[in-house]
Length: 270
Image (tube, rainbow, N blue to C red; front, side, top):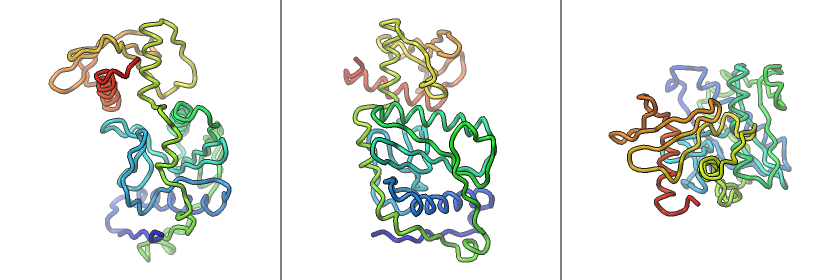
């Protein structure tokens, strides 16, 4: 059994909105644990004692679940759960930025489809009030708590006892078997550069934007296909950095490319 109390100091947060966002996440996590009893939620948010790194899943310092490739955090998941052949994704937000939120959710849903192809992905936005900007996905409305009276004065948050009944991240992550974003990129890259049979579709939207000539990767450069632009580019490796058109390659893309090179070196890119 873990302690249910998470303490914090209001003075440590210069931006009170960030503290409100954090408490709102905890508050909603409690709500979901208590309300949806048939879902096996993944343990997160508080008091994670053992570092987990299974199938690219691990924990961030704030105890949220993350999907990491190399040093790059590709995604951070607010709440994950599983029931029978369904995986639940709850995205908690106080923001009303429609396109940012919807695109981010689409990317996460597409990743989960790749990692767990035998499961049906059920995404939900958790919002403070009914907002039409989230109409693309189902919504759960959880009004905000009284931050000042309920939490700021005490400087602590108490999690539901049901957090002790959550499944571990390791139990969840092993369900992905050998499926990963990197392996999917390798698979699609080979379909494009070797078989010439790659066809873009919405399952890769906002998630996979570049494919690579795996066989042509060397220490200095690699040929890259930009899917949405239908163009080819050359990526150069100079002074431990990747560059495309004299611009430094995006950090996540750079870490993915490093992972692909390592997998190729080990002879597992077929």
